Image 1: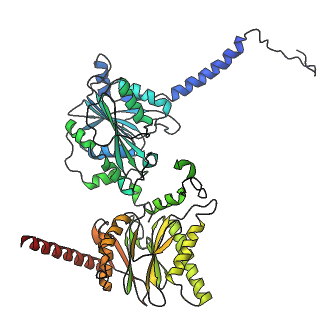
Image 2 (image 1 turned 90 degrees about the vertical axis):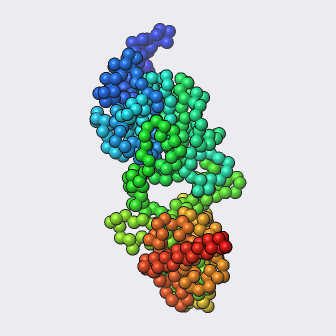
Image 3 (image 1 turned 180 degrees about the vertical axis):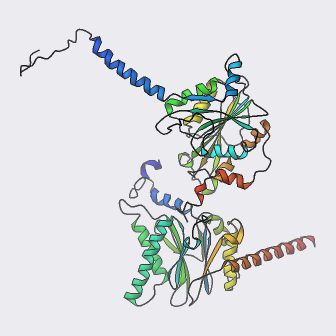
Length: 285
Length: 251
């Protein structure tokens, strides 16, 4: 086609499909998509013993009777203070992933610095069918499905029962009544239909919903008919706080049936896990 | 529903709430407890001492501030906001002395602080002050006064009141125990303030700070030894009462 200025443009006819140029664009797009997918992939790294047991078992699955997942700093702190404080727990694996809020760590070792957001697995020495997972890093929506598939893909479904402890800000709790200060923090529970256990606190009322990792895990358990119970703690403190951690105590009743727990917990241990910036917070007097 | 009407201070919700002001009152609840008692010849302010970091200078962490020789206040809520309010009040006290040649009445300075707070709930681009204050003092005619202000800019006179974290518990205690006998003497009024704080303070007298103004005398901060003595007295009185009750039951 000759334009007004005399230059000649090659015009594409819409009657004919021009495949060549489209393919190039597509290739580039595809490549970018692939790179992003690879970057956002969720990787589970198990310690050598567990990796060996996975290989030895024919179906590449671990025997697990109880999986306890703690999502959030207070839930993780509660487990660290009340359950993982004895010497009988081994760190057996961690999940590494990358997203905009969790830059992930390039370190391959399992021992991550305390306080750093991470997703770690622990197994009880005397009862290796009990697994504890502490997740304090942010997992993006597109990675949640991968996380649950990969983690549950490593565990035997039969005989498995799941407990999830999760933190949530009380500002997200919707209720028609006014919440007096003394009621917070408090627990609410949600169960999968396969779960027959008695919940130790009132059920989560409508229209409140769960989001994030707890929701993904509970949905997976519901779909695969795994008995699961979730305890959501609504708190008004942003940072790890000993009073919020103590709110999870009713869950100890179930946990004590599985593993031997420290009978009495010294306040010092709790304080260690509660935020150290308490004394430095001069915001309120 | 609150979500659409709680971002701007100057917007009413359809049911008449100013959510930012109400949220500011929640900020007050994050501060430690302060209690004020108006006696016959004394006014008492007691506060729960905040735990201070190891390297922090304790005397710079104060909840009780003098506004003038005869007026002082305790606050609960955002520390920085309190500093601004206290500074403005102090300036106003001196300005009043210079212009009118009289010290401020407690009601005047409370009204000034409350008006300042109210102005910040009605102008654009500012947020309310996140503090409640208990203002105590004596007027020129020797009358003791106790006023309380809150982030909305309201102020009222009280016989006894509490603000901060466990204010509700302390106020209930005061409603039961504030009687004419309880404030008969200065010492009794001070003990009432300590008793009220002991209801909510952990680990007793160590975490209590007390300030008193007696008629025609400046503010006095009680030393920790004096507070410990009073706490021991109170505990002994409690034990004696418990013993009496036991004896009554057995007879």
